[in-house]
Amino acid sequence: MEFNAIYVLVAREFKKFIRERSRLVSAIARPLLWLFLVGAGMSRLVSPKAGMPYTQFIFPGILGMTILFSSIFSSISIIWDKEFGFFKEILAAPVSRLSIVIGKGLSGTVVSTIQASIVLLLFPVLGLKLGLFQILEVLIIAIAVSFCISTFGILLATFYESYESFSVIMNFIVMPMFFLSGAMYPVKLLPKPLAVATKLNPLTYGIDALKNAIFPLEEGPMSADFSLVTDMAVILFLSFTFVVIAARLFERKK
Amino acid sequence: MSIIRVENLVKSYGGLTAIDGISFEVEEGTIFGFLGPNGAGKTTTINVLCTLISATSGKAFINGHDCAKEPSNVRKSIGIVFQDTTLDKDLTARENLVFHAYLYGVKKSEIRTRVHDALTFVGLYERKDDLVKKYSGGMKRRLEVARGLIHRPRVLFLDEPTLGLDPQSRANLWGVITEMPKKHNVTIFMTTHYMEEAEVCDNIAIIDNGKIIAEGSPEELKKTVGGDVISLRTRDNHWSRQEIKKMFGIDSEEKDGELYLTTGRGDACIPELIRGLGDMVLSVKLQRPTINDVFLKLTGKAIRDEDVSGMSNIKEEVRAYRRRH
Image (tube, rainbow over all chains, first blue to last red; front, side, top):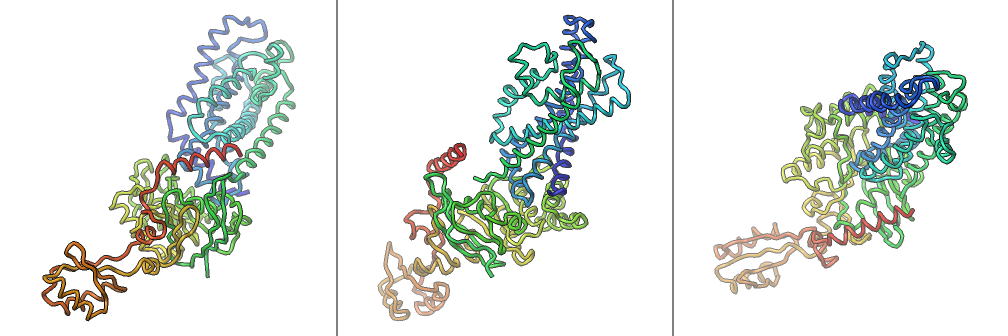
């Protein structure tokens, strides 16, 4: 593994992230819209008696969404790089494919963790009380989930050559991943087929882990669906799998 | 010593053979030109040598390393300037070079000076902090050449380096390229379909339909199409023809009122010719064979009038093949 290459891939992403203000602004605006426009409206329909106000319930989901969008966006920029040639510069370098995948995965991890942290600052506004330990817990989970989703995004990027596929990925992969993740509704309340699909979604475990950390409810419809240990085990296992498969796919020479 | 050695290389995509058993060697410290029309297999050959694609059969060695078995060592030995720009347009010129230096594992303490030297060499130091998207085509290409040198490669590959550049940028880039073998101790492997550019190369291989059809120095190749042609207008063609026959023992041809004579070294003949014919001579013109004449003779077609639609068909076929596999 080449740490110099991993470092410089992350540095490049970070530099571009800071330079592109519009990307940062829209990344922060999206969760705010969901939280205060959709969440506030929906909270009128959902009785707080079910455990907590709806805006509080969707907070982990909104953090998950922030991570989902920014991680996938960061990873599928590979398609952009492929189309505009820069990816060739990376592929032609004396760097193992594993380092490239890990470097790109960590790039996505850094930018999405930063964005998730900014959204996390909203918790007092929603009336949530988080201790220092909980905040740390959320950050650690955010890092793990960001890496998992970023590597999933890299895997997606290996299948597409042109940037026109961007909207396909957004509409048919990212949006369904968001809706079928337990972000907006508890998985345990979903009808069977949807519940099955939800359980196949890596993001579900990420959001569930965040739910476990943010409001450790014992029971009730709004409580977490799996244990924190299960969530983390799934996330780590999937990350590992995505990295290995993506590295393999990049290795393929035509 | 040969820094590049290619033996019987074949690359086929399904039924389409892009490279059809080519062999050649490149001497260290020279400029080697790989010539041919679009779609002849130039870029495919570069991609195999750069370990970006694997060959169907045959062998290729760079700096003694097997391209198929030791890709990492090969990659450390080479720099590449691809046909299409591969710069990050959202980074500055300097950042692009620093990125490259890290990627190739250049020692941290050396990065600063190497980036500085490379930018100075291609004359872009003043513009180092501009975003690459503000660069012109010629500047981008020079920046890519600078980047290709950052890790001190033994071989620099240039795929159609002057494609799409205006004449001034082309001349500018040529100045940079021809200076490189001595200044940076690097061998240049370049492809082009501009015949004038091929004249600068130490050695040339001409490729057509995936096969090498001629190889040698530009001078050697041009000799194969016959020598230089001197055309002259005189006051008395009949008398002049006889004089020329007496002086050189060559029959000259008369066409449209002008005399044409073919000789080995036309430039050396002219002074003698003028001395012999005196003020009978009205004008003298020397035409030397070009690489294009070589290509024309070997294939019966000019190198430039390639069939564009045929080319895109090939690209389409390769793409379809890649999708299936």
